[in-house]
Length: 182
Image (cartoon, rainbow, N blue to C red):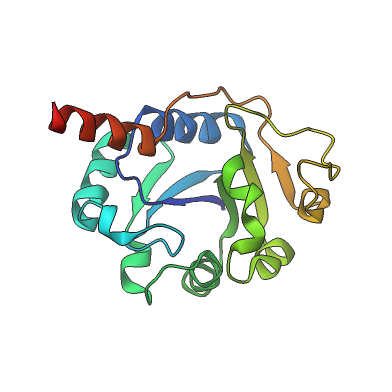
């Protein structure tokens, strides 16, 4: 089976996550999409995270009626912080019969060289990139704004036909803080 790995804090899960999950299973060659709730993202402060089990249950509730989408606590049993390279390596060990594809947002592709063992991920896994508000050039050639050679890699697939969901967990948390201070 071809499995998409869509990892994140899901802090909180929102209609953008759900809409993308639904679109990916309906419009790509993936058989399933696994939302891997990460207990501790090394690039984000853990003090801002809701408890991991609350985020896990919220994600399960959000996608419960979408065929082909599963929510997983796989990273809960791995060393912390959660590095994607480690997660993918462990998924391959646990499920050798599956072919894994990483699904990330375009914002993550822009900082991908900051990820631990990003070169291992690029060499061993296909990466589907979801566009954000400002789309990257589909030419996949490095530009002055994006000089990284990683966009020239054959394992990267831009989901250029995916709908744009104009929302982020960061925005939702900011709105919640504003309501709490009013």
